[in-house]
Image (cartoon, rainbow, N blue to C red):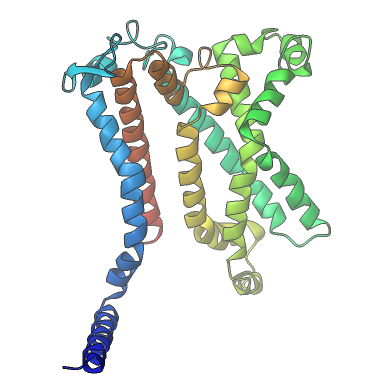
Length: 327
């Protein structure tokens, strides 16, 4: 067989394989084709996210090794998790309690939930109002949008320093204001007041994120629906209740999902405003415990944090499915 004939057969084989692959893809259902397109992203996610998560879980099953070159000690199974949830590690290995209802503003889990619920709820309400305003056609709307986005563009460290200096006695007006209303003159030294300041700082920065996402959902609504509602004699409230809210609800749930995940991982804002010793969060607890070479305990806290976030995400997914009428 000549070289030209061999080359021709190879090309025919390649074209045949290509045609077979094309036919195979064409025979896929929409769901199967969607999963095929998602395969590279899922593989990348497995390498970047799931592998470190499994490594963290494996580390959490070992004891702390405070001496020697080894990072972790012997295998102890679920002992770290048992000690963490029963409070045995609060005074031994953890700089702040994981959960302690007697001092909620010193408890990392309770502080995280308070911060998440308060900040996300207020940001959603204010962001929804801003989105409704920006969805209207008025002169100077572009400049208003730019003004709303500016706080969101500020880096977290700069944001934290702004509020740190604002509530420093003798420097910012915030400390004088809290003293005038009968509160402490050193608000950043108190866990409860410092947590309120951190929530305020997060609302100042991240409300724009909620507003922009909700605005995108509002602008996707067909305007002819409002024209029909006006002809039918529907009031503004009825239009909002029957058209705006149901159609924008999926977008709101997506925005809530993103913000809740970010809020439950809060660390940089707390560290720059008051410090993790004053206002501990779950992420703060992981970082501070890790810095003391208690790698097994830190891994257990990190894995519990990931599990809590996973549960919250699952709840949001179920709610999103219900709002869509099922998948």
